[in-house]
Amino acid sequence: MIHPGSTKRIAAAATPLSVPATPGPVWRADRGDGTYRNPVLFADYSDPDVIRVGHDFWLTSSSFSHVPGLPILHSHDLVNWTLVNHALPGLVPVEHFSRPRHGQGVWAPAIRHHAGKFWITYPDPDFGIYAITADDPRGSWSKPRCVLPGKGLIDPCPFWDDDGTGYLIHGWAKSRSGISNRLTLYQLGDDNVSVAGAGTVVIDGSALEGWHTIEGPKLYRRGGYYYVFAPAGGVKNGYQAVFRARHLRGPYEIRIVLAQGATPVNGPHQGAWVDTPAGEDWFLHYQELPAYGRVVHLQPMRWQDDWPVIGDDANGDGTGEPVLAHRKPIALRTTPTAPATSDDFDRAPLGPQWQWQANPQPGWATLDAPLSRLRLACVPRPAATLWLASNLLLQKFPAAAFQVTSDVELDARTEGDEAGLIVFGYSYAWIGVRQIAGALVLVHAVCLGANLGGAERVLHSRPVYAPRICLRAAVKADARCQFSYSVDGATFTLLDGVFQCTSSDWVGAKLGLFASSPPEAKKSGSATIDRFEIVPLSP
Image 1 (cartoon, rainbow, N blue to C red):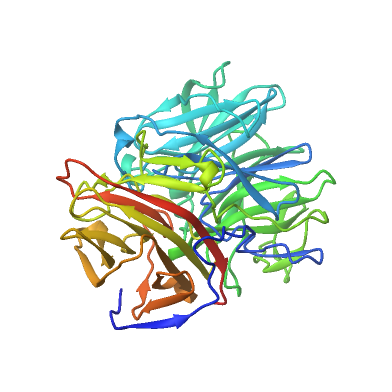
Image 2: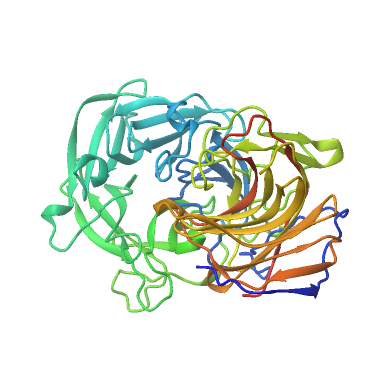
C-alpha cells in the first residue's frame, strides 16, 4: 500500500550527477574473519542448484519469464559469488514469450557436468523439459532441446550412474497436470537429450501419511545408496527431506534432515548438496522472504549412518536446523563479492544483473559505453498500466535495506512520453518525468494490485526545469520504500509516502528503469541514463 502525503526537502551526502557509481557488494556474506553469515545470496535466486568442477563452484536458479534466463553464478568458496552469465539469452517458444508471462517460463533447473560438458536441464511447466549444454559456463550455451514434452513436468534433474546410463527424475505441477506430490524417473536415451521408454513413479507422497508437496528432486549416489534430496510441505512452512534406497527405483526410506525449528529461517526449501576439494559436504537451499524473493542459505553437512545431517543438529535426532553464521567452507582470503548491482553503463554488453520482462526487441536499449550512457527507447505501453510492459529493465532486490539513485534525462517526442525509476511487483510504484502539455513534469505514480487490474494513480506531480533529474528509492525494513528526487544531485525532495513493495508470480520485487509512450503513440522519444547506483542502508 502507499500512504500519500506532502513533500519535504532534505540535504543528503548524495553523489553528484556527474560522478560515476562506486561498485561494491550491497550485501556481504563473508564476514572477513573466516566465517560467513546467511543468506550467502540475499537476492532472489530461487530453486538454486550447484556443482563443483575442480576448484570452481557453479550455481544456477529459476528465472521464470525474465530474459535473459538461467543465471550462471561462480564462486571459489560457496560464500562469495559473482554473476558471470545467463545460459538462456531468450525464451522458447519465442513468440509465446514476446510478451510478459508472469510465473511461466523457466522453473527449477539442475546443473551438472558430464562427459566433458556442462548440462542444464530446466522445465517449462506449459511446454516440457529442456536441456542445454556448454563447454564453458561463461560462454555460449546450446539452443534448448526438448527432452520430454508435456504440461506440468517440473523440477527435472539428470543423473548418470556408474555404468554411464543416464536417468531423469522430475516432479509435477498440479496447476497444469492435476498431479502433485509425486516424483517420476525416466531412463535417458544415448543422446542424453531424449527419454527411452515410459516413466516410473519412484516416490509417491500420497502413499505417505502426512506428506504433501514433495517436489524439487536432486538425485545422487553415494556408496551403496541412491539419494533423492527433495523438499516437502510447501515453500513457506516446509522442510528438506532425503529419500534413500539400495536400488534406483526403490523402495526408498525417508528422513526429514532440515527444518526451521527455533530459527527464523522458514521453509527451508529446495537446494543442492555439494562437496569441497577437501571432501567437506555442504548444502545450499532457499528461504522465501516475500518481497525479497527466495534468498540462498549455505548449511554445513555431514554424514551419519549413511544419512546426511544438515545444519545444526543440537539434539542429535537427525533433523538439523539452519545456521545463521558458520565457519567458511574454504578459508580463502578474498575481497568479498556479490552479484553486480550498480552500473555506470561504461562497458558493453549490458551488465548481467539486468533482465527484461519478456524477449526483448532490437532498439529497446542502446549502450554508449565511451560516454557511460544508456539510452532507452520510449516503447508504447500495451495498456494503461505497466503490468504487461515487456520493456521494463529490472534487477533483483540485493539486500534487506538499500538505496538506489539514478540520473534520467527524457527526450520527449510526443505527449505522454515518460521515463523513470520503478519498483515492480504485484503492486508497483515509480518516480520519473512525463511530458504533459508540452512541458516536463515530475511524476510519482503507484499501481496497487496491478495483477488484478488495479489502476495506476498519480500521487505527486510538479514541473521540472532541469535537463536531467536525479531519482532515488530507499528500501528499508519489511521492504517499505520511499521515493525522492533532486535537480542538483545534492539536495533531495522526499515524497512523504511509504510504498509497501510486493512480490510477483513466484518472484520477489524488482527494481530498475523504464521508458514508455502512450499506447497510441505514432512516434516516441527516449531516455538517457547516466548511472544506476545502489548502496546499503541500515534496516
